[in-house]
Image (cartoon, rainbow, N blue to C red; front, top):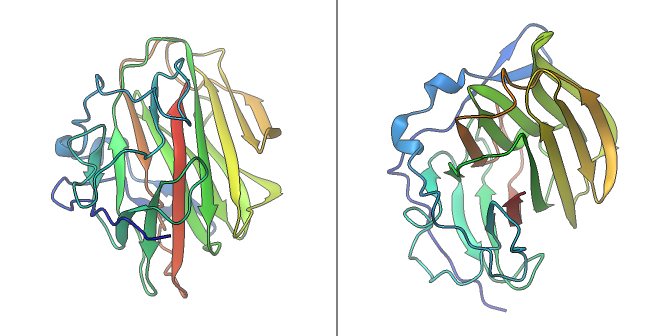
Length: 255
């Protein structure tokens, strides 16, 4: 099957970066305040809930169907996030039904790859991020998909072949919890990252419908948030790729 290529513009700037801190093995993003304002202009009114991978109950959803080749994602639902790599719409590999977002990362790259972000309005006391992912090879480290909520950072991370839940908690500014669940390589998997906002909040990370980590946490200062950003961008931190790898995303939605 042919592949419909779609360039992700590099003219809409900056995603959150990743630096080392504390011990030599614990990565963390830079402050969300470093996000450039031009990367925060997603139109929250452009909600796609009509595709096969997008339930009508979604707050935001994109199954990456219906895009025109080379039309670009920026200016539709998304704002573009530049970096090392190539972004396209993949018509050869998809979770449902026939297209996905593909990000290719060559050898010798570090920090940000290309990606997209969106800032929908969140009016509830919690959110669940759903996404289907396909990874060709596991990087030593990558933030696979991330959220910035009222200035606090949440991410599903790959490190040394296993999943990590990264989140904010008042008791510990950055909680970075390694699980013993291996990252599936060369096949689609579904992740669900459930957040309950507020001082009595909590987190739950599930893979293919099975909970692999959950905890109570003071995720945000209040139960109703005022600022929300979703980042679909593998961030490699300070790790340099030693082999080319491809990240595919499909059916990305917030509920």
